[in-house]
Length: 255
Ligand code: SF4
Image (cartoon, rainbow, N blue to C red; front, side, top):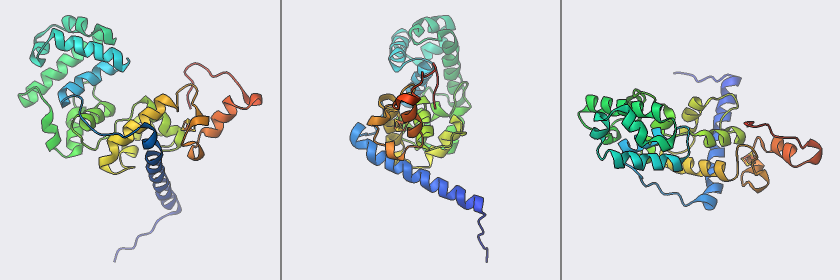
């Protein structure tokens, strides 16, 4: 008979995971009435979501939308994009920023997808196990865990957790991840904190909280529904609320 022996460190790690999972569930319970109801509905098909996500990199969603609409208007089919020159594509997406870098990347992605599958669509990913679908997408140039999570979860409803800058910030402050966990690790940790069919809700609730309350430069801890459970609240309250601790916030400073 196999005996299970846990070291003190192993037991402590398990308790840490259980505490974070409970915190994730509590965050959803508290935030949904405020920001919800959140209902999954695809805004794009998977390939459209992939190209749109490339366009959102280093710019706002609003600018990316203008660039995306301009791209579709200039090149009605994805084959038209493959056959166009990078300069023409760059002109079409100029509004989204970094056009000269994004244009050849988009064209190369489309070319590789066509070469590998003989089609210009990605719905087949939904028939694969999650890790296989993730590996397939990550093998495309410039695609990382966040983009993969967005395409698989937003467009195909698969249980992949996208972690953007807002979610990463909120997660570190709340203690959903450790302060030393990088954003890649955050994807893996957060993806298993809640049931698979809750991942879209988890993403939307945390990103909305990050945009509206747990802001980068000056979080509104006094208005936060998670304040009593937050690991960082006391730091911000001291920094922003108590006159004797009041100090300027440096540009780009986050906790
Ligand atoms: S208490 Fe403050 S730091 Fe913590 S989650 Fe809320 S807004 Fe963010």
